Length: 370
Image (cartoon, rainbow, N blue to C red; front, side, top):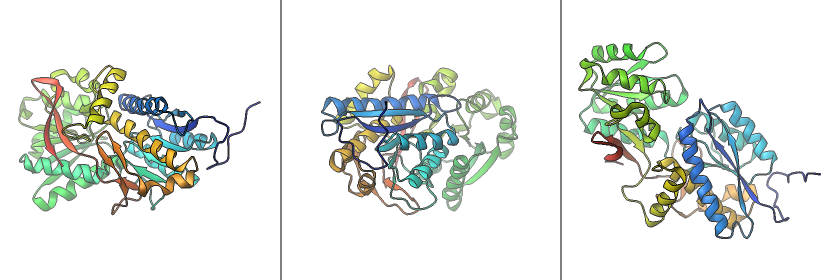
């Protein structure tokens, strides 16, 4: 006979584990490598919490659900995890998926600490139930636009897929660049092949092409086409959404993977905590950890601190967001209300524009910090 889960927000008194639901893209069409890095960070932090005595003597347990970048799967997972009695939700990488999860969590009264999704409008209305570690897209992408202007680019083409996330990114770039004399030329990837993108770039006289498209395709094919078109040897390719962050990018593109600036959310130098976590993550992943892995670790660090001090009650967890003060791997984490953002927001994690070094593609160069 199975014991039914407690009602939402109920305290457990039977010595069982404290459970956190984790939403992750672990299968295609989700960005699987990002999901794996996020999971590695979450799992490492859970292990360390339990090694240190758990949550007031009770083990912390991660209940993982694969969203596969599908908002419907995410909504179903949130419903299931709420029924299972999780104390809070964590994770998700894809912004459109996280928006669905946040909306559902808000409706159910389930605390959700979003690790990695950046879309400004995670919820349509202000909510007490959702907080976020990743910077809002408008913050990071404005920094990226400033980098482009500083590098001398004023005519910028964007190869854009159709989604709320990519449309939001294009709008942020245009709003930031236009008052400073910049022009954004949109190339609709629903209608263009990678070869046609090259022709459009020549016609547009753009000096930079930004990849506002999915990974690995069509991003990889676009890069190959542009890099091997003799008419475009001087054009800069950029990827503000961070496609070049992961090892798969270098594996698929080889030398073509380098010199493509992207956003990542790491400080120039890690703190002692960050350096220790980096070593442990590298061992767990058998490769250099991405910033997404650090986001996963920091997510559990925050939730464990809240659960120790406030208990498992969901309403008390949600009420604790403005009182969080946790030393994360990338700096002190505190949440606040930020204009235009309807969730509790860490304002802000460190933001860098980096690329892979052409001389050594497995090494990153910091080009700009914001």
